[in-house]
Image (cartoon, rainbow, N blue to C red; front, side, top):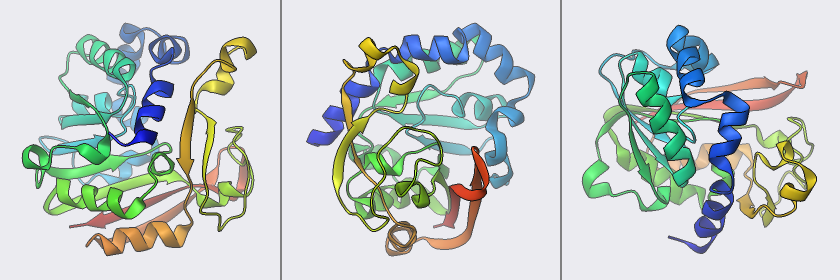
Length: 250
């Protein structure tokens, strides 16, 4: 595991289970919401799937299973790849309450076993701010390509690079030059929800934020065929971009 992954793992295992209970409810409460309307729980991402039943999905940095479990309820065979044991605990408990099965591999995404998982998935799916945890986007996209079956689809939704220059999503992260290539330390995503004395003790993550051209060129260089690129408004201001979605095939 690369050094910055060790650092990010410490951050994502600090009170993470308790955070999910406080933010999303107990596993049984969350499972009830997932079962009531799984497509609604997938939000806008549901529209990027051609089908759900019996497809095999790699959910990259799938966190607490917030998208993996609705996918499983809809009939998908889902494997979550994530760095946090706390996330795994909450996800598996919620899946059990929802009466579905998901697989959950804890580890560095850059070290996914390609002998086991290469050419394995119909869909590779990620959302909610993933790319900035990886310092080499070309290496990352190469692994995503390797995981897919021929003809498979990558759905990559992330924070819009425009958020580098302004805190458009109120994530309380520092702004910088749009073209900055700096690696920097910052609070983990949920730190802002904790009391000040806990927040100050939380381990920090190591980040590298990318431009749109870096992201698109990494997708192309990995061998993908770019099928779609959508920009979505920031949830704080509909006049500016806050997220984007890339759809590409192998």
